[in-house]
Length: 151
Ligand code: GDP
Ligand code: MG
Image (tube, rainbow, N blue to C red; front, side):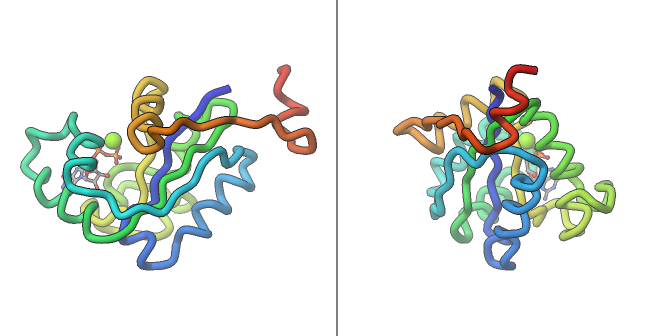
């Protein structure tokens, strides 16, 4: 079963959009597998965004991301990484279709309220970085996951 790391950024937490984002993943049929509210250090964020270190916006990205608590989550389910990205929308909210999280709630690329892993490999890296004690997925007997799991 595929897992992805979804994070509500400080602006999303401050604006009270955490519940809305959780709701969308729940109603789509993904399983909430881990969740924490954490005020990350700059060092931790530099590790999370290490691929972007050379970008001009990197310092402001780290400032933004360390400006308050974030809500990190692991969501599990079929095609969780790709589908999670689709639900988030494009990196630039103005290019995001209405109906996506960014397309419905923001307009600035530097304040785009949520993060989602962009590949299965990066998802596993991010889950290990944000949940170093590990994440356990427990099968839920009454959810659609167990009904569709064999397909
Ligand atoms: P994502 O995977 O869609 O979040 O996009 P990236 O991994 O390319 O970039 C990480 C984050 O850096 C984005 O979500 C934005 O918050 C920020 N970012 C990306 N591109 C820009 C940019 O051109 N300007 C600014 N200010 N921030 C950016
Ligand atoms: Mg990215």
